[in-house]
Image (cartoon, rainbow, N blue to C red; front, side, top):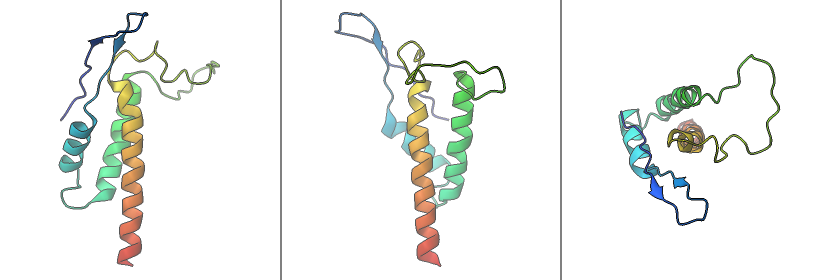
Length: 113
């Protein structure tokens, strides 16, 4: 399994923070080839993306739990304070991959019927 690696680079900004990097093409192509797209199975890949999205959300403690509601400001999901590793960058990528594979699955169903 290909894990996303955080690339810490010195930031030229005045805040002195770090930037996170993610090799999007390498991560997505490896996941696609290992989970069904080698054979054109978009449903299998979409299910993989859904499971991986759930695992990543759980790992970074960004779930919609049954606990007490705590109001958060808009945009706090991926704010600079919460993004401490590259797994936070996987959330939008996995969501986009899941949506893409669903669209391709629908396209296959339409053309095959």
